Image (cartoon, rainbow, N blue to C red; front, side, top):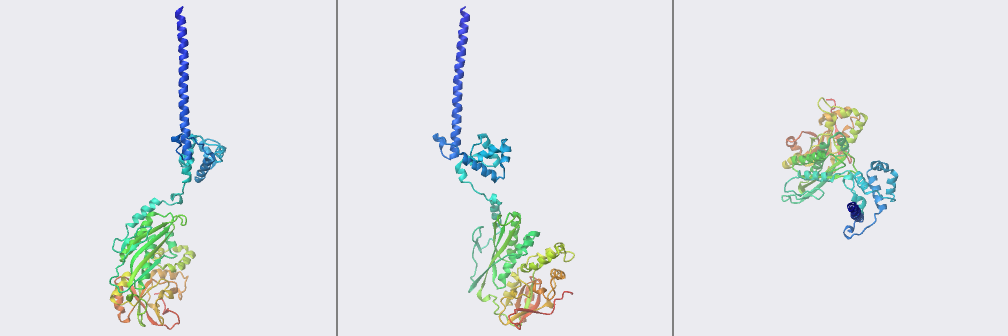
Length: 480
């Protein structure tokens, strides 16, 4: 009788104890959950406000309006609609609209999903400091600045390593020195050249290397016509999102042309402007600096009536003459694929770079034969090509002595420009003219002939045509 009662009392006591233990565990569990929830709120609130609240225990309310504004901003940045975002989160687009209007907040779990989709951190959505420090990166403009700087460093390795160039870092001034110890009165010259209108054809048809060599050669020739020796050349390319391998090859062309002509290369600066230039677009230029003793400058004062004019052969076509060829191409697009003979394409011959006449001019000066040099930058019979011709004298060109080069015969055969005015539109393959004394013209021809083809093309005569610096006699022998 006592045993059943005892067992019953033990069972009741055990039951009460279990209930008490369960209540105690539940209380402990609730307390832990509450503490964890409290800590999470403190951390999120501190994150939102950018304050050390997690350490001091301050709790700040999340700013629903600001968070909604940030969600809307980054969503639009990624070209994502409210519906796209809602579909990704498996909610209604009205819910997204409420967030962006500041009427409600997404759950913590959704914040992480939103940050993943928008390619931002949760911190950027919640933290006021991160929002105020947002910026536009170069990559967003279409420019990879890291790759660009790496390319510029690579191009700097092409710079001449000599006593002339002291410093030629990119995005900085070029520091240099020129030895003028053997000159009584050194005179310095400087010019910047661009390829002209044929640059667009070079870009469209892939003649990037040729157009760079053309700009560099023209810059040197501008100095040479005054008798100054080119000493330094620095190039520049302004471009959009251009192929970096091509840019490096273009820099190599400038460097190689400098090396061939004994000129120090001060590098190629690159100004990447994807906002102003489209993919594949570019503009190049070359700046050359030269020096000469004042008494050796070719001012034209030593020119005499009877001096012989020696024409030196160049390649391609001068940039200022290209507009005439452009009209031909527009009228007859078949010319883009045409050949001037069995082996040579018209475009290849057209886009060959001009020649720099540094060796020819230097040799003539050293021999004492050179009285004046004329860079034929426009047409052979264009007066602007004969700057420096003194008053009372002019150049008489014997058209019958001119060589008929295949490129110009081909252009003439297009019958777009008449025979009587053709030489007023093109240089006919004569890139530089040297005026030498009549007594030494054969010797001068021999000096020039060591470096390039040349011809006796005329002579200096008294000016029988008022204010005209160049005229012609005879006819070009097109049919021979």
